[in-house]
Amino acid sequence: MAPTDMDQTMEPDDLKSAWQALDARLARQEYLQLALLREDRFDQARKGMRPLYIGQSLQLLLGTGLIVLGVACWTGNLHAPSLLAAGLVLHAFGILTAAMAGLTMGLAATIDYSAPVMLIQKQTARLLRFHTLNSNLCGLPWWIMWVLVVVGFAGLGRTDPSASATAWVTISLGIGVCGLLATWAWIAWRSRAGDAQDPLRERCDGADGIRRAKRLLDDIARFEQD
Image 1 (cartoon, helix red, strand yellow):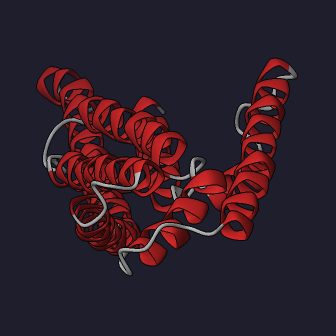
Image 2: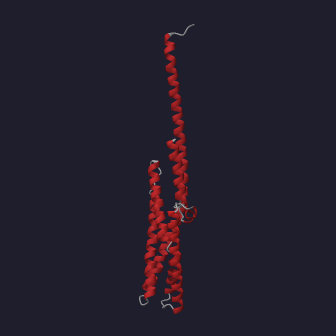
Image 3: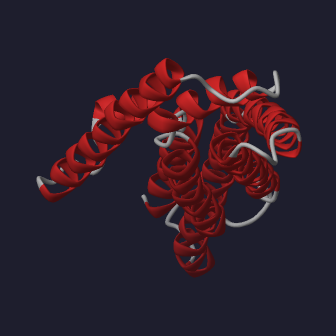
């Protein structure tokens, strides 16, 4: 039996409907895959931030301890200029250390993982830049600050430092300044050489969790673009 005109006209419609159904099914599968990928990557990113919170909490405690030590040192040694100066520096550095830790944790907490990926990438990049600043301001100065911490504890005795102690402090500060300048020069040299993301530096600045989250977000962005 020869096909009727109606059958002939229905065949292209059936084929079109089949293609539309297949496209809809593929779209649903792609949507589900993307949703599962986002959930998995975001969960990994959140878990990766835990070491950052732990590190910054310890930094906050350290800053608080420096404030207490600095106040105890300078308030009890108003008669000794060297101890007074050491106590004031410890006090100020403690405030900076605690404040930078609090701000870093605040920026990490404001990352909205329900937002579009591009926005989360911007928030993560901002957190990484601020953490780098935190590392430079509160980490590198320990070439010198450890000496002042020793002086601060010594100042709790309310006695003027001896000549030998003063000489030790002077020599230690000199070595610390040289080490600090050498570290800054090394960082600047690596940056000019195109190694701003130096692997050794990345392992030492405590931002591994942020960089891991950034890579996970990049994976999601590439999947969405594909």
